[in-house]
Length: 131
Image (cartoon, rainbow, N blue to C red):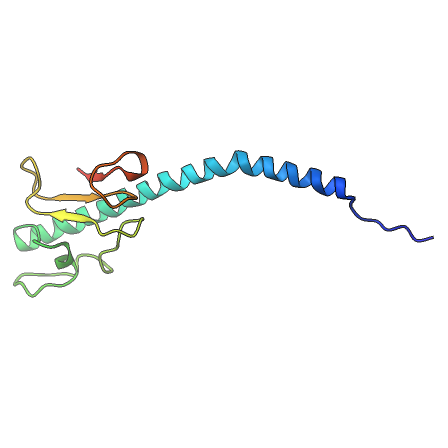
């Protein structure tokens, strides 16, 4: 007599319920980590911009009017490119905000507008301003 060896429907349902419970506990923590990681990436990219901007200023005597001048410019004394690749978008796919002069006497303003791409906001939508 041949006996089929396999899982019963009840065993499969129990495994599915256990996997569902584990997923419901782990998933929110993983999505929270993704959010904080994206903010860290934006901060790291802005630190890279800061280095490139400072190098540009040393060569040119002032900060660029446009952040794209870190890659290409016809100005005399330009010794770039100051970034290895084109200026990236922020982790949410939005362009970084760059203005010169900056606010409160700062030489420039550099920011990511967060997930929503709008000024202001809270949590994931909060602006990340490079100081």
